[in-house]
Length: 167
Image (cartoon, rainbow, N blue to C red; front, top):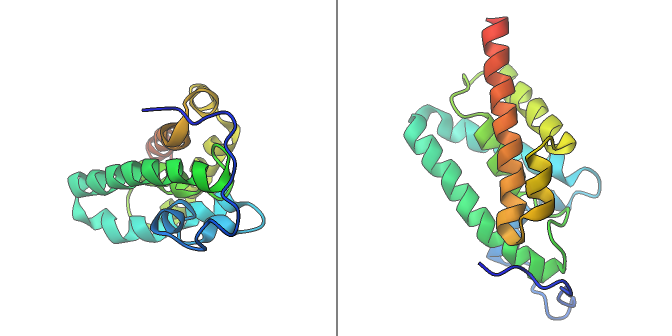
């Protein structure tokens, strides 16, 4: 894997296609274009995806989550070229992957969708170590994706602990 050059320049509007498969993916079907809190809006895309796959069993769920991760890695790398910077706010496919990690093995109840959403956003924003390390040190699309997956792991642990303490 090569890291992006330090002098990334965004493609001019004339050279950048208005939509491409990569842009559709990295913006989370356009949710990442929200003028305020694009990461929060992008995370919302994870809820219907979770709802669609949660009943398939943990192996297919994990396979879909890994597919989102690897496709997101590719799309996030393309975003660096399109947007001229690492981890631009419009890139929200990483939030989707992090939310799916959060919800792994969670009971499919509407309260849990919101509980997982809140935990994931908390750890994605606060970025405890090693989330902060991955956010700052890992280059390219991999770095974009890994910090949110790690935030998802923290949120998953918080979800599991809350299930134990509450139920």
